[in-house]
Length: 360
Image (cartoon, rainbow, N blue to C red; front, side):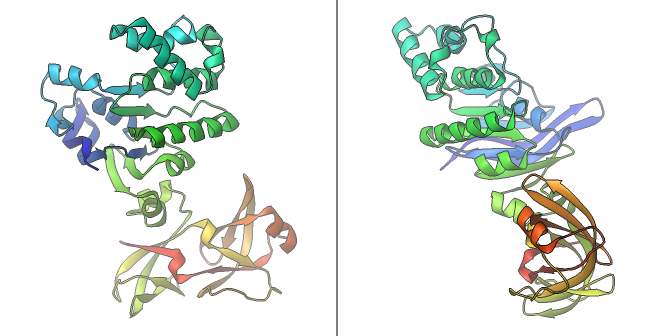
């Protein structure tokens, strides 16, 4: 693979406020890059710059290895980029006419327009809606029409600005799966902005986490979620237990960490005396009742008391007081089998390798 789109020393500032400051970010050909972050983190502003819809205060955007230095360069690059927004922007015309719009601007022959539009309407499952007025579409149908209008142009780069956030969960799941198959089949270079963890995990080859206008970490989904580079990234990616501690002993990569007088084992090369943060995802924690026989190889066993049990989709979040707070996930079946209630004594068990260690 090689780089199709990148920025260097990018700065977007309004008066004295810095909206985006990114030293380097790139997109490889055929790659899906998910840009993830909370509201106000600068995701959409970054996407506008990458789509040549907004001029940066400073820095350079490169397209296909060449700097985009003039207005003409920007217009030429924009012809190879398609963008889909959170709200479908459809004209008061038929679905067919909306999807055909870009091809007609390019003055392609009518037969080519008809063939290509029908092909993409069919691939996105809305060919039967071709003659329907766009204003009568449901949210999911309208977003499929927006995607068809973008994809029919055969762009070199596709930019997606939270395209699923306004959709119902079931409709969103089906559309994400359909889009994933299209992007993989077409090997289409894509930058996808979202604040939803599951969307980033489903679509992204790499994930860039943004906060306060800056890129905090760029890596594979497995590393971003499993090995966050900072406390800010850890919190945003769903690490609910972050414990400050001090290394007290090091044994060939297995460290003993003091956390408020309790000793936990963690896999790290940190040296004795170093201050660290221990990051523990709720899915890494198992719970055992007082009469339960210990199974597994967990090296960390912490007695505690159930403070709260909170429904969370198909799981329950269990908040424990172990002298400090620990959060675990349990299934409905596990909760029922343990007859788990607030105030119950339990033991939290987790492996040394289940802890991610961040230097402080």
